[in-house]
Image 1 (spheres, rainbow, N blue to C red):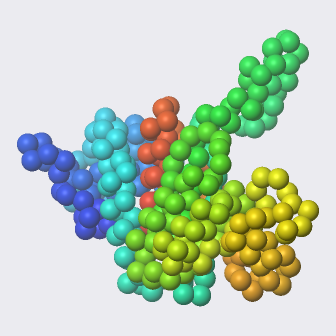
Image 2 (spheres, rainbow, N blue to C red; image 1 turned 90 degrees about the vertical axis):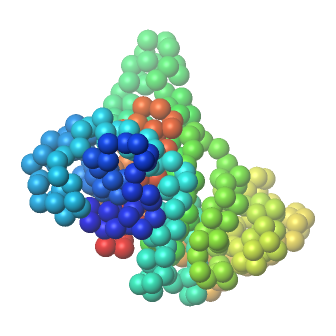
Length: 306
């Protein structure tokens, strides 16, 4: 809570409105939200916990525990895109001052992952789909229809310290290629080291993504050229950078030498967030689930920095 309070205190204004009651500051409410995400509590359970934890409140300067409605309204305003970008900027600055970033020797890895929209086991979904097929109503509760509405999180991670540098939140399945530029540009303008290597899986494979990274930003991009129709030989790949990727990643030794094998560190970060903070979200709408994903990323970075 203290680390979250210091983070928000350096980037966010103390109050949402100058005419508010000023019972709680914005950094104090953000610290409470990080505690909620860390312990996996609801707003009401967090309120009960804070009522019994006077020492925690004293550390961040709160006289009495905030109401659950106050916490809910604070999350709706604090976890918008602009405040989250400011907090990510400050987290990267903290990591830079602590010399945690390893982008001079390690690449920047990108990957996306799906989260559960509710707390339900996969076994329950299989049994429900089986009962639906027995009743001659296929597809009513199938996994295929469920996946369409699942929340999706894409992150760009420093492979040296597992810190999330940039993120993208969305809903449903789809190609990863469209949000490659968003992730890369946010990471590029946020990092002090402007010359690094970016590695991604075949979902981000596209010639225009290579052009954006190499010509517009001066970065080295490595992505396997296997998306779409699988070519029998490199002669079928007509574009310049995709043909080079096919040659560069052809052997295990070359993949290790160019740094592409470090891409698995991004999958490690996704696994860390799901194991430590949970893979199911509590939000009922797409916007609230996006806020939950942003809070997970900020909490994960605070755990790394702490």
